[in-house]
Image 1 (tube, rainbow, N blue to C red):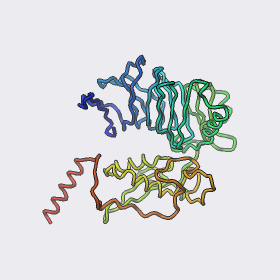
Image 2: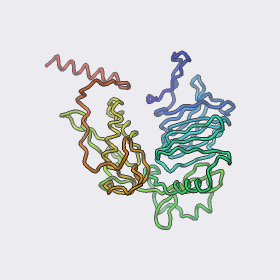
Image 3: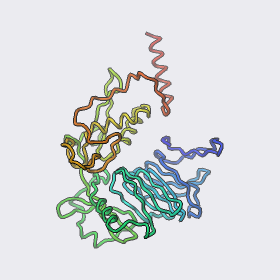
Image 4: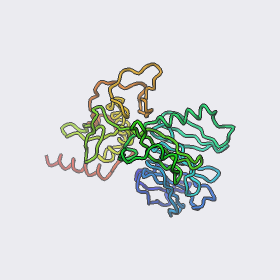
Length: 365
């Protein structure tokens, strides 16, 4: 849950106990196969990029480390392995406490992963709107041309610099490093300075015993071409959002490398707003970035026939079916709320305090 807790219920729906120990939002759970060396009953995954292994009594018995960002989905294989997917563009397969395979996708995020119970094939769903099936059985694998196309699409991916941190090009090794050095673990990533000055990312495959090109690192700049400072951090955009007439607007920082819904969720949480505004705030971000993508200006001409309306980086933009309009969009006005609003998730203590404060002010005036 968003409160970082895991709750265990009986089949009748009675709450048995609450498990604490996660440091961030818990996004996924899965049963750990019998025979796993940890002897765990189930696994959890959260925004801190850690898979935790638990017994049903709430005792943590292990951690799986390797993901570099939010983990969105977990599944288990009959072979005893665990599969995960996340915001770092990867599907990872875990045997025991070790990651044995990393499958990088040509997308911003891999939202979900599932396992076919009949044959053990993996199915992934990513932000590029493509469902992919992976199999260990040769007869079900794609033809060499399709596999080559997948590898090429991964190589041509753009990786936002925010995802890899500060990169000092002068200190990066050249392409010869890939031939001289082996990786130390599955999924290890190194940055390489190419002859043309660009920076590429390469991921170590333990199975193939080679470095695989997984994309080019690019700067992310907004429509102005300059970063904007907010609370000591640089952002591509810092929006003003009007919440109530007569009050100063709230600041909504956003980087093009972010998922609009993640940025909207953080904005709502930081400002103690109802989660029912999530779609509205995410839509506001999508509209006001005007289709800007990593490494290119936001204002663009009409896309040619057959072009990808979601942008060259295939980012998911909720609600869009074509290139967004370049017309300026007014700030959204959330209050006053003129229709009944059902609040399913809220900080009840804060709401109660505000209502009491309002009642007191009405009585005194």
